[in-house]
Image (cartoon, rainbow, N blue to C red; front, side, top):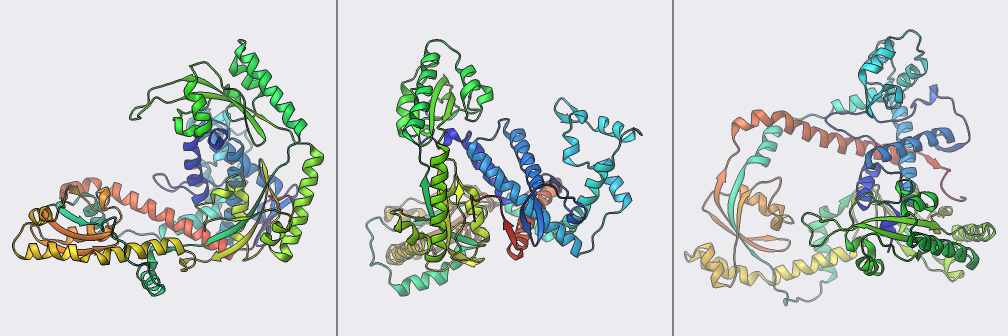
Length: 606
């Protein structure tokens, strides 16, 4: 119910997963080098305990902490707020992924014999200093990197730059590898011209869609039907590596005394606030939620649906300045203050500007330790008998995630994203250690694992059946399409033939290939046919996945050739940037798939 509020910003969630889990390197108007730590294991001194290995190369605790701090700083810079509890979990996953990527890229660079040279180190220091240096307060002006201050320090003979030089020297081989990879991606002139036409060639068209009637119910698809539809549409279900996990999630045990103590504290804070004490100051003093240092204020405008059904009713009844009674959700008590009801452009109702106080229940350490020990025993049993059976023996139930990949972690593991990351590198039927979430202990087992390529029929059972049912309905509705075709053959216009059958054609204006009309979003083949037609000609019936179509292009408008010269550079940059991102992300995934990665940091135990 309140997960969105405990996690800070819902928009942040969507953005951060996209930024943090899809790629390690981002391209913004060109190539930007983002790795945070030294990359060449041969020049790095390890300190502290080892938290993992990549093909035998150790990752030290200090390296991991440095990468994690870098992620926290990036998060705060981007969203101007410290990460909330579950955001912190995501940052830990990203920090680990970045370190793994660094080790893999460094190994590839060494394999290719890429080495730094003194002149290259000097040029890099002068033109592209490491991010750790550019963020130092000495080189900042009004919160931004000041190149003049940096250059003045470079010229100061009293400054010792040896450590920065070593850092740049260790980074250069990987930078060279990245530049070599990016240089291999090309864009030909015909491809650029086609990209321009896709954006700026337009058609005005009339389209008649005949969708199967709601009451049209053909017999259920047979196994032969499913096999045929699978072969016909299997390309729609292709993807990279995808994994399905069996999940056991056991809530942490909170004793009555611990819950009572926190409930009484929450109630006393509510009384103090209602008696006139400052909510913001109490939030700073007591809250353990995001934004506590800013008085608990949530840095965005919420809608009523963000609160969930239970809290929404309470928030609707609040006046500005009032607070809710404390609410318990698992191991937390929360209260909210309504700061304002601002008008949101385009929204049907006013929004909610709120602040929050979150108090965590402190579980009894002995109880928590005993529960952890019980989970470890269950984990050991699961290794030999399977997670589902081991859980059932304790009267517990497991669930299964949907198939997921690096970019789409399963919702069941929202609180323990490290468990989903573990699953991507584990073998079929392998059992994890015990992962500790904010309010639960989690054990997972790899239930299914599929390498890249089309999904199997079993993997897409429900979507395949739905597609087969739609295919059968479209086939059964062929008669209506034939009646329209007969009317057209007798000289009727498309509009007249449609009206005779009680249908209304769509009038599409300014349609292009890149951003077609939303009503044709699921049928790109129809959009393609429109651009291939000569104006005035009617074609059909054309079969698509969701019905029959009749098409007529009324006007074709070619893009202005003079505009091509103006936009050529911009279009080229956009395409290359997109290709580089896709290529580099795929390259890293391929390296990861071949690597031997040992993650020794996340679980309570293995």
